[in-house]
Every structure is written in C-alpha cells, then in structure tokens.
Image (cartoon, rainbow, N blue to C red; front, side):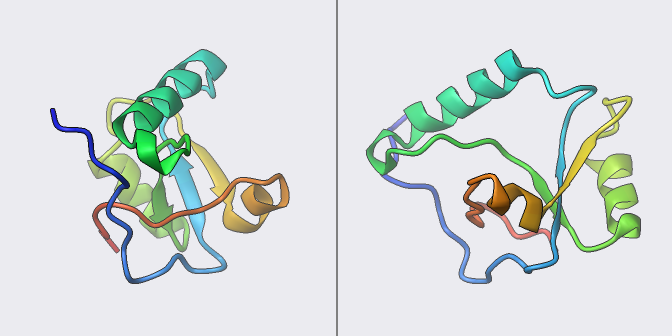
Length: 99
C-alpha cells in the first residue's frame, strides 16, 4: 500500500451540533490506541493520530448507523462534538460523506 500524505478532507464541514458514534462495546484504550497508530502510520506526513467515527445529527440517524454500519457491536458510544472539542479533540471531516 502506498503511503498517502494526508487523508482526503471533505469540503463540507461537520455540523456544530453533531453527534459522533464511535464503534465499541466499550471504549478500550488499547484498541483505540492501535487504531490511532494505524491512522498515523497511513498518513505519517500529516503528523496526526486519528480514529474513525460516524456523524449523526439525531437519535434516528444513530439508529440507522447502528443497524447498518455497526450491527456487530452490542453497544456503541456517542459523543457530542462540543464535548470532544472541550477536551482538545480535533474534528476533521475525512473520507466519505454519508450524510
């Protein structure tokens, strides 16, 4: 696999009131660290670590994500964008826009 310089950044931004659905059963720090490291290695020149999440704007959209993209998980974790940013998490809209 060729190393990419940076991930594809979407032109359409992320809504201020967005909810982010992170796959899980639980938030396992070692699994999240492995995912973040894989992201960093893939986009090493960007110099950032990252994990994937799905964006939703309401509970109905979360239900759809759970029923289609996250069916293998017994539970998921949902964060509000504002809360993530309050603790220093940068939200970058990358890859496909499924909204």
